[in-house]
Image (cartoon, rainbow, N blue to C red; front, side):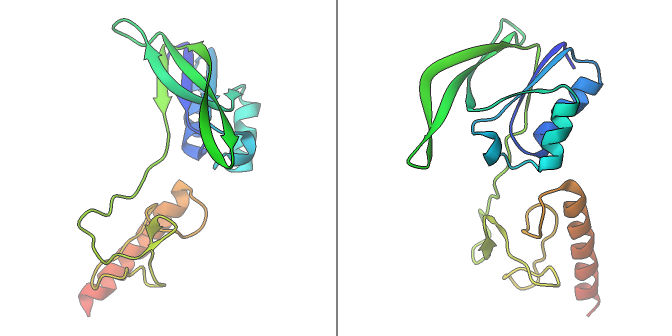
Length: 171
């Protein structure tokens, strides 16, 4: 990484990226999140890990511009706040120097071409055999709602879905 790393995001992956950048020698690592600490999707354990690894955390900030000539030099953020439960961007800004920017801002399931697929909280709904609402279609990994949103859980779900597919094909 560079000497001044900015990580954008508030989940476990963002924190992991920030901690690893620090452990790999970055002098200053700042993690930014658009909401407050109480809204972060990262587990409490991950948030504590960031603190114990000297990662600076800036809340209520959304990126508006990456600056630099040929390479990143800084990131400008707008302050955010909640108004009637909705996140809004303010006119107040601040800029962080950066020679490396990592974005870990989440993912969204694209269901294009999957008409009839039932969802559960924005993820694919599956039964105990990892079968979806579409006949012969199975799902596993982090696209299903199975508990904590952790890589190890996604790997386990993917493995179990693979076993279910194998059993289905043998029938």
